Each structure stands twice: as structure tokens, then as C-alpha cells.
Length: 152
Image 1 (cartoon, rainbow, N blue to C red):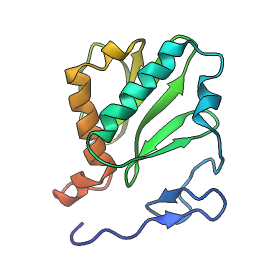
Image 2: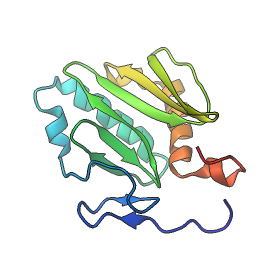
Image 3: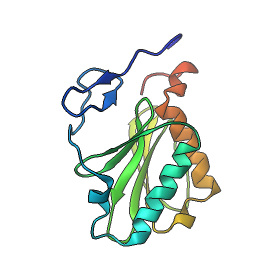
Image 4: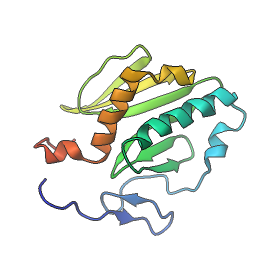
């Protein structure tokens, strides 16, 4: 991918923006409060810390869907699910990685991995986790495609 990036497509129903027309999404409008209702307050603190880490690198859109919260730069690259006592966070990376809070890794292709973490307190988002967030943000900006990477 070289040169300028194609403009994002805006869904006429929900108003969210995506890389391609008719990109799959839940096309719904939920609030963040919906996801944290009935959860321990620490769960919202964990999410807020995650969002603050992401926003260090640039602008993002938070998309509260029915069953999860997605975080998007050009593409969705982070997010998760609020549980009663923890936040199940997910990051999209172009490599496998390790972290003490890592619970599961999904493989989407040769250079595309979904990493899932159980975060129980803001301190779980340590320096190593912050470095993974930076990598995921670059994926969300599609920087891996500009460096000669293949579309995941």
C-alpha cells in the first residue's frame, strides 16, 4: 500500500466509519455505561486506563456494541468485554507476544493475531502491556501495510 489511504466509508444507519463499504459491524448505538452497569467500579477504571494508553498514540473511535467495546483508528484493533470483576481486553497484533495477563491467542493468518488478556486492576496495564498497545495502535492505523506487510 503506497501513497494516500482511501477515505473511510460511513455507515448510513449508525454513522460509524470503516475501511471498506459494508464492513461487518453490529450497526447499533450502545453507551459505554451500558457495558459497565452492574459491574464492579474497578472494571471501568481498567477500561479507562486502556483507553488512556491507546489515546497516547493518537485519535481513536470507541464503538460500544451490544456484546463488546471496540476501539478503532482506521480499523478496529483493540477492545474487549466488561465482566463483573475484570475486563477481558483484546489487541490485534502482527506477531505473537507474551504477557503475564495473556489468556488466549487467536491466529487469523500468517501475520495476524488476536491476543486476549484478563485485566483485574489498572496496574495490570504495565509498561510491557503499554508497548503491546502501541503495536496494536500501529496496526489500527494500518502502518504494517505501509511497511510492505501483507493485508491480514
